[in-house]
Length: 506
Image (cartoon, rainbow, N blue to C red; front, side):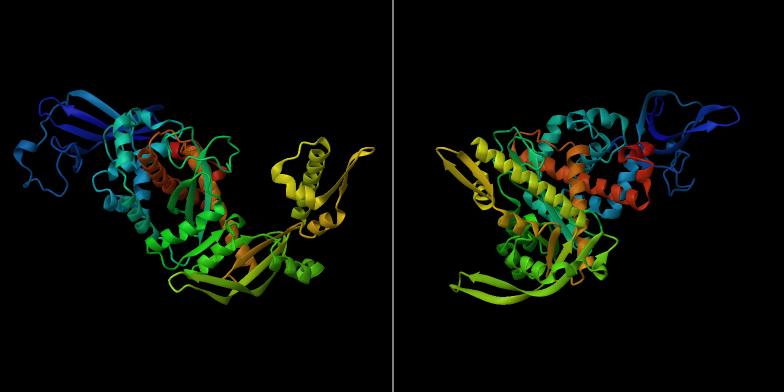
């Protein structure tokens, strides 16, 4: 274990900085420590000036060293000693340099980038504590800013983070990503009790929390496994409505060779047309109830379950074909609409296990509908399905009689076990499925945001503070995602948790 120790020479007034390392003395069978001089604290700037270990600045010879700066012989009296952990923060320093986070933050926030880095380090290393506990962290850890950031100062920092600076950071980080890779896009909900935040609305809460919320959309590199864009949205905006906003902002950011992976919650004809219009490549999940999907399922019949169509890697049967997408584009400035065919690849998959699960879930749903009908406790959102899957008769003598519509139920059963992907670039169905399953990097990132980075519920009451805190949290997520990726590559999760690995560096 290593730590930084600062010691004030009472006679010269110079504060020396030492690297103290603990080790086990095998001969004496006792712990020992070794201290190495690494620098002095500049009295004006407070920064550490490196030395060669003998009290001299690096790069200077004995002839160049002024006589007045030579350390005096004899014992060095100590009046103040600081002990700080630096292993984990040094690791984060190296990650920041490797990924260009430090350089990009400096370019966007020249006066505050060190504070942002320090708060991001705190969120990663002290994931169970709120930012009000930063003062204790600052006393025990070396960090980029090097001083305490009280709660009031951190609030002021959050409020100072502008939209322009954030967009510049997204642009710089985006350029560091490989243009050939697909970008996984998804969103999550963050609950809030605040009545002052404009975008806090009731919507479909993905955690099942019965509170108003904001929605947070994230964009991840499929190969790098790193985030480089996020956007805060109103809590009542459904996923399908967010794609249009995403397309506009990617265009503003200057991204040209865009490739998106999205689940079927983002599918709509308008979204697909918008992606074609921007010449973006995409891979999107689609519903099996769509006409072209049902037609392909009917066309294949049982042949999809032929052995040559089986993927042992993913335990599914697959088939694909090229279809024509009916592209339309309205041109308000000309008052007309363009219509044309666009080539699209339709990938169909059949999973026997999913077929069993679908049957069980659907049967349980039919049972629920029947109970609601017979008890008279009908739900407005189920009215269409009542009419579709049941016939209700009521007579004065026999009372209420509910009869299932077997034809409709059997028709729905034909789609059990199937799922569909569409793309305007990926021809191979196995490659398409492999790309689609990389979306789990976003889902895991949401877990990191809510659990490790303490972002399950917002704890701020102003829009500017929320925007700033989300940005710092996003920066933390980049570091955390990189650590997680390297741990997976090196099979370290069999030995450590993320917290356990970080503690090893402390």
